[in-house]
View (tube, helix red, strand yellow):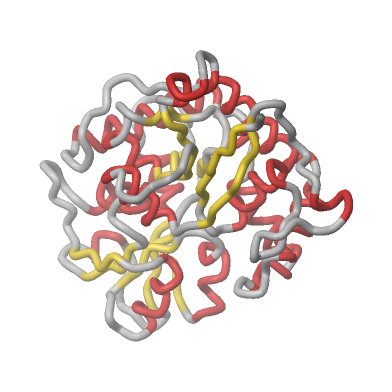
Amino acid sequence: MTIPLRLAHSPDSDDLVMWWPLTGMRTPDGNPLPGPRGVPRVKSERFVFETVGEDVETLNAGVRAERDLPFDATAISAATYPYIADRWAITRCGGSFGEGYGPRLVAREDSPIRSPDALRGKIIAVPGIGTSAFLALSMMIGGTQGDRGFEPIATLFSDVPGLVLDGKADAGLLIHEAQLTFAQMGLREVANLGTWWARAQPGPEDLPLPLGLNVIRRDLDDRFGSGSCAEVSALLSESVRYATEHLDESKAYLRLHSADRPEWDDDELVERYLSMYVSRLSVDMGERGERALATFLGLGADRGFVPRCGSITVL
């Protein structure tokens, strides 16, 4: 008898790509494609997977509150982990790290704002206050003791550009594919948070900017037997590895789901984005990824923006 597990992910292309090998290719309404295309590429004798797409800030809020969250594994923002470390463990795979690049802070082309310093006291549209992008922005502009230095408007990530273009926000914080397409919308970059992080981090080591994580419930061992957490984590790692080694199949899966995301029909754009956020650190964050995460969250705690989470468990 197989055990069904539900895995939640954000609706951007890197998350969608990483997990389709667990289910096989499915249509947007969840039906498997006929023939071999609909067969999972990663199989288990014990577990079968269902994947569910949700906005990452919805997932961040859900894991913090445990409110109607029927998932066994989920994507979260790295900045959310200190709030849930006692109940969820980080998987070695599935993370998103910015290596010299990251979320973009943008303003209108005609805006006088040219630097982050000019945004102190201003209104910035952000894709959720639980996101790593928001934590990095707070550290870049703000002071200490939780002084962020700006007024945030939290909204769905896809609504951020419109708020800036309509003049309802002085600037906006972009995640997902909009990091690559903002200029086409009439927006101008004020800062790249990945570049800021590379300069701001302490010590000589060049650590990447932790953005997204994948986590699993710590009680899987209690529910399904000792070693279940490690077994599930290994299956997830195999899925990410397959997806990165078979990019033609992964891009075909994105095109299958591109009705509401026409940018996924642009092969060059998809390849650029996936090369940024489905990297070797997504397959296995390794010690370098763990150090980056500890450094990022430690600095956030020092500045009063997130609680201190102690040791970080990575499976």
